Image (cartoon, one colour):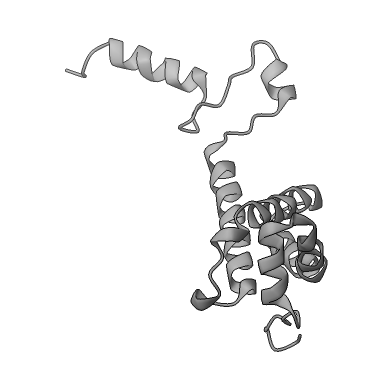
Length: 137
């Protein structure tokens, strides 16, 4: 829908209840929400493969935890998109923790390596050498 709302399946609560006991019933929920969840995830991550993986994780988590959904707390779409938001947040947090170093750069012998602080080993060695001389008199 164009106003930002998500269309609800006509028999959504019944499908959710069935999917709790019979996972095959989840297929209708998946078919209905997949395009919206995928677009939500794809907008927030850098590539399509990652969006595919995260979207699969969202629906896997939803299926595994469908028994925890409580209609009194809100619509199913809100619950599903909260799972999607958390999956994207977890992914982005993990990406910030990783330090990417090109294999080409790492494989070059004799080249200064970037350290976690952003300076090079050669600069660090210069700093150590200066520090070993003692304070200026």
